[in-house]
Length: 235
Image (tube, rainbow, N blue to C red):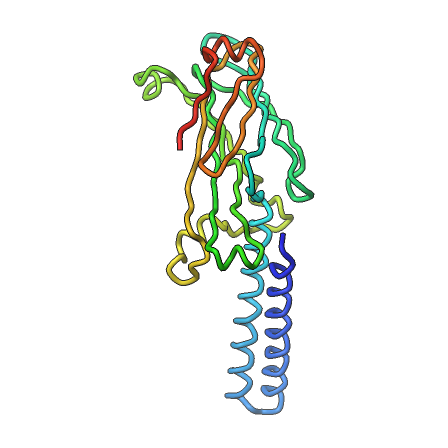
């Protein structure tokens, strides 16, 4: 996280506090108009600082993407017909993204993992913002279209919960970048990437992310036999 993500909200918030206090002082001295202007302006700056700080917290949940790198290991264990337990080990990436291991039940023939990717404008790169990604969700996938439509589905979020920052609310950088892109055009492009592979008892896969999306690779015999020695990716 670049330092100015926190300096900017702090400076704006301090300016807002000063204006708010001056506005309240003017009101107490009987200067109603000046007091209202100062109070409203100060409150506006404070609100802007809070929004900027929340965006900074959300950006921390994304990891920088400067080269091809592993992001997760997925292991599957069969529990029944077209029913598996997937162990997902997310790779650590600095202090903000520690390693995490979770178990997920999946219905279907294949697992599918998805990611969100933020690519910034060149001028934002100069300020320290590289292309960033965040694993988004894990789901089960049926090979049969009819089963995909009618059979039991399973989808699990891989993003941190809304209260992960310890606050009762959260601002999504992804949603904000899409909604307000025409006003603050710092994002070059936003896109989703996904990869899927067959599920098999004892199979183990590694998931890598590149500048073009996600890639899944089998790393043991069970996974290689299930995927016929190949890998699958869809962007």
